[in-house]
Image (cartoon, helix red, strand yellow):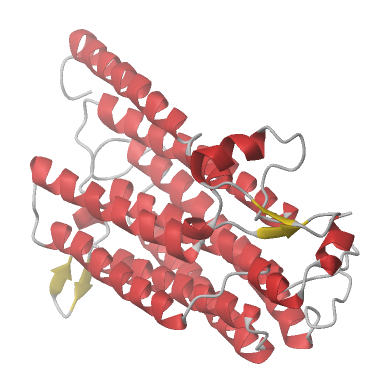
Length: 240
Length: 120
């Protein structure tokens, strides 16, 4: 979007859009990201680096799965659950997927209420997001326990290629760690919102900078990223 | 510097600059679509589709979900092209890496077949 900007002479000029705007922004010898604050830009760049980390995990999983001569365990059966005597494929994973998507939905709406300065609704929705996230980690704990009891180890498993266990624990473990950190991060920001820190610009404990409701959106970026990574893990590890 | 500039901007312009303002309905619609797409990808496994049909459907639903999350939930659709390119172009390197590792994995696989035979 083209923002009218104030100038020293009082005249306004309009930034060019599209490719003309792209070259003008990068060539201007000043900050390149005109619409994103430093906090948001840094979160995006962190998420980009995290993208490479998860990409490397998924690519190494692909490499070991393609190069083994032993059949890969069938994830549809391995992650199936017995429900009333009928085995339903991937049931727990499907529930976990829906829970994480729902947490992303509540987070997006929390960001929206934050910018409307409705702090109680924002904090409540963030707490709901944290609760969804915590239940996701709980289910992952259940899944890990079940598989470890069934004899899955990083070096072996009862159903096929040994590399299955190491890929599974590495990828889901790293993702679960991200969810856990996200839940803690959510609780901290939700507490600040609830107290009204962002309404009167109370300085942050570590940074001494005045907090704004944009902090909620930056927190949201991290949380949506965790959901985004799960979309890829669900497709490549569980469904493939 | 930027602070004094921000103070000079009329309140109306600040409201435009600060934050994302979209109707809640938009997020609910995207949420609904994410549920539909997740159900579709789950059904691919439930009905046991196999082969290229399975893989192409999985990747299709995955890309649509990723697009919705990044564009709407993460507000990338409303960012400037500069930020979009800075964040979304570097992962293309991952696709190059993917190509290299497919090549490498096939080589390892055929080497193992040649030296150990099947089943080891």
